[in-house]
Image (cartoon, rainbow, N blue to C red; front, side, top):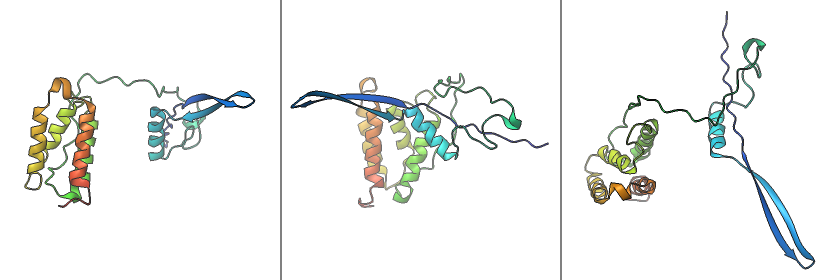
Length: 187
């Protein structure tokens, strides 16, 4: 007896936007409308997942439907929110310590971001200030000591009640990129 696994494609609907414009002419006012379809963030994600898994919506090995020609399984609502687990724990492993080697900088920061993403439901992992502190704790050595200390001192001066905002993490990533990923900077 052989078993065939069918991986259903994920689907999502796009948002449709209609824009009406009024144009004044010498003979009067004319109204025109333009309809565009803009993918929603959910659709963009599902498209990327399907592309990565090389799936086409509505198809799979043997065509649509369940294996053996039986009825298809009930549709899964792609917009349903997945509930958070009650016993959220740290998962994955931290990236290796970053010593300032530019050749390893992109791999390091991508590893940190993947680790943070994997653990985003763990208490504190959505805090921009804690994300920065995590990165700084993974930086050691002569090539990073000054930059790491300066960033740490700046972080210490911030007020968690008012300064712990998402743009802080974005700005930190930009500073890291300028310092370690910019190919024009001196090593």
